[in-house]
Length: 363
Image (tube, rainbow, N blue to C red; front, top):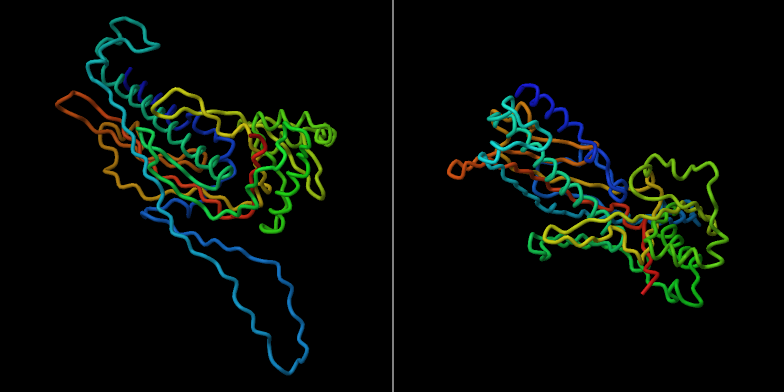
């Protein structure tokens, strides 16, 4: 029975569905092979290119007109460190586990039960890391800053990216007040993205209250088009990621597919629900394929997995070609306890620093 359970655990671990499905905001950030590093820091070249026209020579005999090279900035980032552990008490393994029959066939099968408990612990820890990746992406798109807290609720990691204020305005006339003009407010951010990022805005993500206020505005309501073919909902990058497709609008020369995102998370030290998408904001971005957003992973020192756990618990796991987690099992002999440990160092970086923006539309 133990061998069968070990095989089952391995399959569940590698096929865990809740981990294979990425969050809505983290879908905008890609991870390639070069983004997995074994170093403490990572370097990214961030370049803001203009669209200057070439000057014409007045006198062809004077030689080439010397142009200055476009500046780029090499930024060095230290990804945050996540190191989580969850215990398994051996004496607790003598009791019947959820889903088991209370009969002699399973009584005392502590080793098989140990593998099962470790698997469940790893899944819980990996989900927490996944939520942190989604939180980083959400914070960047709405504030331009990553702020992560420790187990006591104190800020432990803060990284502010150099976003332009013109991409993160607060509207003059709130959308739930007289004189509101959602279309003009959205268009202003679209134009800032086009002017600075040299790409067209194509996606608008609304907080719940922001959408409810916008749809009550007559001009905005008349501009909303229902996608009869449901093409926006079939966007392969955003399908089934948690955002609800609401149709599209044409603003100036831009067509924006619109989503409402209302998923939530809990902080480690509480049970209060927090929305990934601020209900009073609207995020506007270029199409996913036009963005250079990355989630990179710093190196993680680890002693690795040891026997007898190597056959069922991989020392390193990748989910959806993105999230990387390092696993380890160690024991506290005095306490008769095994610890499931998961480590990861993810950092989301908006290399296309001018290809997105965020409106604050309600007080």
